Length: 428
Image: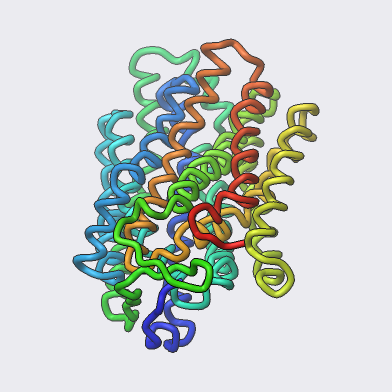
């Protein structure tokens, strides 16, 4: 890939520890949205399409803010960019307070979008940082280590936020249906008031972590100024990022991967409810999916690159995704839920493999390339709405709608794993 400043690689584990902590924050904030979907359906009486605007607001922020984030990082550096991202993340959390007091769904979406904007900046900084602080061949291992922190946060979110937001959800849903007038207003106010303390605490924690990083010796990483790629024994210098087709194929691979991940994680609760499983049980299903991802990350840390390459791991994961999606469609009840959850295992090594493959050989374009890759996270915004539209507006059975929206994602990921990551690089 690129030449990297030796100081960044010789600082020991400190950079990895800081980034792992950031990945924990990414996971907590992102997967909290999975709990907010049924919570807002309960509080505002939303349809599936309306409730999925939660994921839309969060993930579309990546599309609009990723490239500006790249510009910010070029101006202020990785460390200051991370500090700024944490401060904005705290501000987005505080927007939840007036949103709850005014019972305004649009203001909640604004807070979620601001959080997404902060995460776009943090992700644009953190992912290339993990990739280039060591050998590119072991980047998937480092991202897997950080991914364990990310998914562990996601596993505990339903138990923390689910307990706080969705306690006695079935009973409250019935009370709201029969309540009228002031009694209903008071009930809705009490339910929405549950967000106040958790998001105040999160805002404080994000601010304290930003202060900690301010006084932490976190090295900058500098990539080479000239982009050099192998080409039949010679070298080719690139002057434009558009000369790297594998980057854009990789960004679209991130798009469909995140789409598949959100469908397996955030949507599994809605899927379970459609199977007739109560909200008091289905609110924990996201933890099953993330448990599968956690297992996959552990396998990745052990196996990559010692036993298998990150490209081969991506092929295996794509094939598992195809198989598990088919079985989930052909079964019902808890068996179907189990195979939706097992998609977490299939998805686990995709981001760790796709991201370094997409930004490989970019040299001085690494930050911009990283931003383009991060833009692909918008897949998580589009796919739940597409699923809801196919299910509700076109009238397809919810399992068939799930099948036709998720299967193409894994087909494209398999293409990228086999051929797409090599396009334009002249490598075997």
